[in-house]
Image (cartoon, rainbow, N blue to C red; front, top):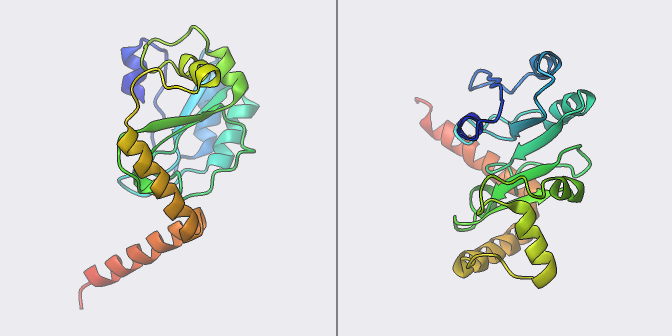
Amino acid sequence: MAEIAARHATPHELLESAEDAPIDAAPLRALLRARPELTHVAVVHCETTTGVANPLAEIAEVVAACGRRLLIDAMSAFGVLPLAASLPFDAVAASSNKGLEGPPGIAFVLARTAALEASAGRATSLVLDLHDQWRGLESSGQWRFTPPTHVLLGLAQALDELEAEGGAAARRARYEANRDCLVAGMRPC
């Protein structure tokens, strides 16, 4: 995320924590108070490589209290960890694979309407202009560019399987059982 911001010459500050620990909201509050020019906070819900889940509710509370906007990267978490729509965030990005267990190839964003409307004309990329894509879908029901239909069909199947499994809580329970089995099997006798 920091590299993306740097390439777009967007002022940013990187707040890191140990790779085996969730982000602490207190340093975030201090950072936002010290850097009033920062308008958004982007956070990873669950880090893929470590499985560490960040405390979204605490982070969202700090971000809202400081008058900033929250963007959530839920690539690994979506379909596995709970994500309350009541949290004050502008957008959540996820993909067809990872927790949804569909084929890779589609990224999607769930965004508040007000955030989408406020982004009109501000995209720095034609391909990633979410407002334009949203307006096109609303007016014609069509994607702006050729969709990967095979990936869409795979995602539809993956969503059916997620529902049949019992939703995110059941999927998380299966993942935790798999983890426990692997850890037990790797321990020395």
